[in-house]
Image (cartoon, rainbow, N blue to C red; front, side, top):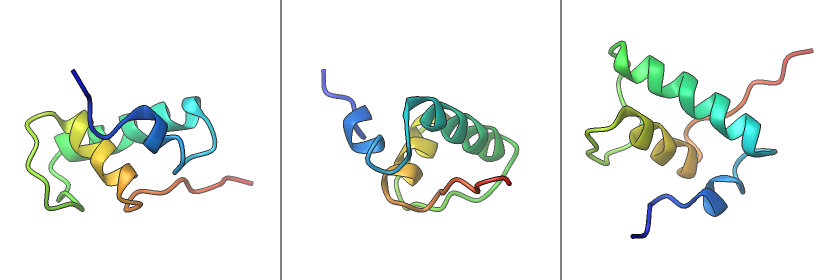
Length: 65
């Protein structure tokens, strides 16, 4: 079974796998609390929807100083 978006593709959008987990989890939490999706894709899973947004470059990491 092929999972889309693939982790390989997602890692091209972030610095490392730990950052990927954090940004996806935070965005999924925002979506589950009612934030409007930034993608047109229809997904039941908030985590998959958040991953789609990361893959499309619509969710970014804000670097803290």
